[in-house]
Length: 302
Image (cartoon, rainbow, N blue to C red; front, side):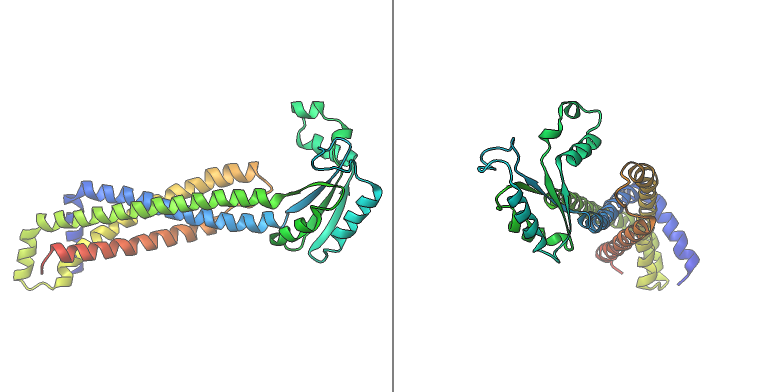
């Protein structure tokens, strides 16, 4: 097989189907970008699960004089009830690792810190702040065991669990990942259709050259290979564009914006990006090569 001749045929083929080649490059770039973005989203979900679940606390808010009647029928919590609640929480060890009591003064100070400068902070007073127990857990995924063990105790107004908020966040992120994968799959399908159409047009436009190659005894592989290489080159160029897009996103959005404004979270790194784009591009190239090979076998009888 003459390598120089094969490369010349590839260049000629790319020129003849320039419009379709550009369409394949652009569509491949979009498909690979979406697939890599889905993989990066999954990596970010795992990072956030590791970070945030370790910080999850359960807040046990205690009844006060201003608590709703339907939640605190017996009125404000008594000293005996408070001791009973603390003993019950301690009995849940080793699932519970730390207990911190927060009185009204501390609750007010934390509230003012969180909502400093807002209208609600200006109206708040110390006596409006509920007392609470802050409970840390060894295994945050078992939060329901702790909640079920204390939420119905006398003197407990309600139990707030940060896990429920995080679960909602992760559901949203998983939907985002699913959407990106679905769009990537659709774009890959479009790429394969474009490749099939490109192979058909290329085979028809070069039928004279193919006829000459048959006459001189060229092998099937040497005739088909340039067509497959054309598709692979177009998709590879799309992969390079996808890498550029994701690199720009990582540099300006993730590192330039998110890591500076949301400092309590860790985000995906360049290593994660390299893995994601590598997997996306490799998968796309395999599908591209397969589609090109099947299509050229169908449209080019040698």
